[in-house]
Image 1 (cartoon, rainbow, N blue to C red):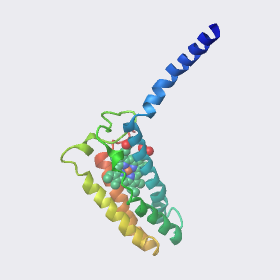
Image 2 (cartoon, helix red, strand yellow; image 1 turned 90 degrees about the horizontal axis):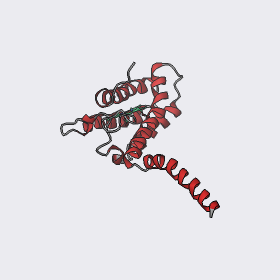
Image 3 (cartoon, rainbow, N blue to C red; image 1 turned 60 degrees about the vertical axis):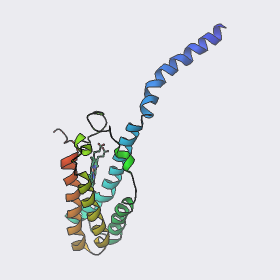
Image 4 (cartoon, protein in one colour; image 1 turned 90 degrees about the vertical axis):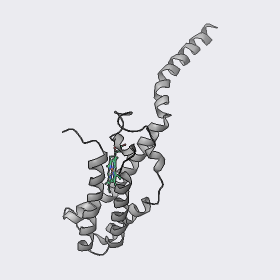
Length: 159
Ligand code: HEC
């Protein structure tokens, strides 16, 4: 009996320790925040070399440029709207997200920013592999689309 009690004691302690962590992992809103940040990271992973080529920080490589721009285009067909569910702004989750509450306000223009982004990616995917000059203009439009949305809807880093 003593042994069982000791075992139970141990398992209770581990349950108490385990609970807060698993409660956080099971929060669908935190999962949504992680998912959209993951999508943004993949955007940046693909867009980064395109920006670097356009700026001359990296030699132009037409096959790579075409592939990366096409990756961004393929990602447009992902309907990841659930990752932007209500109640997931930095007002509710200050530690986890930089998404500003105005994204979800009635007069939010984030849809327009998303549309600009789609147009920029589509145009870039058509041109990226066709030479450095073709890439340059479209990469600038893409950068403007990323930055435009971040300026309006993402909390600034404190520096
Ligand atoms: C329509 C709006 C919009 C567009 C367009 C957009 N972003 Fe974002 N991005 C956001 C918002 C909002 C966040 C903050 C998300 C959060 O913290 O939950 C973000 C976050 C990020 C992050 C940080 C992710 C993390 O791990 O916290 C990166 C990197 C990023 N974006 C890159 C890009 C790049 C590169 C592009 C263009 C190729 C782009 N974004 C286009 C709105 C946008």
